[in-house]
Image 1 (tube, rainbow, N blue to C red):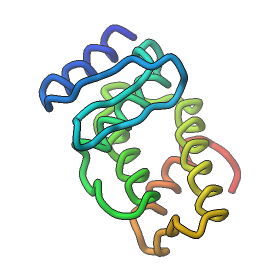
Image 2 (tube, helix red, strand yellow):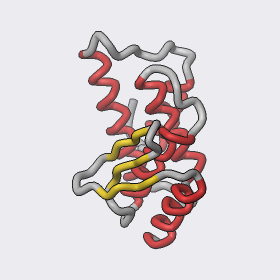
Image 3 (cartoon, rainbow, N blue to C red):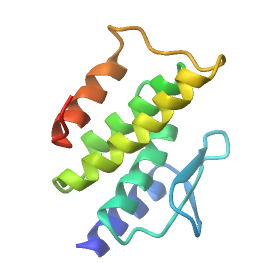
Image 4 (cartoon, rainbow, N blue to C red):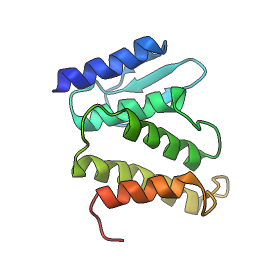
Length: 135
């Protein structure tokens, strides 16, 4: 299974001329202009979704906007492009990442909260509901 996930990420990178750099720590980063992502090797569903998320920052829909809007758009890319059903634990990890950006936005003067009608909130609610966590 993990080979299939790694091949999917490699295929997307090849198809869209994205260079993938290996990182040692969890998380990831996308350098849009250089078309580079830096992620751990894809060996689990968690590393798979992080790689897809970073690819989404480069080729996904709705990549512009505020930081939170960009993050939601990259998670939308994961939801539409994943070739396997995502586990509850994976949704919890996605929610954890989104919540970390929300906490940062509440403390920051530079980060802008999306308007109530923005797609960010429907993506957030979808992920929250699939993470099976209470409101």
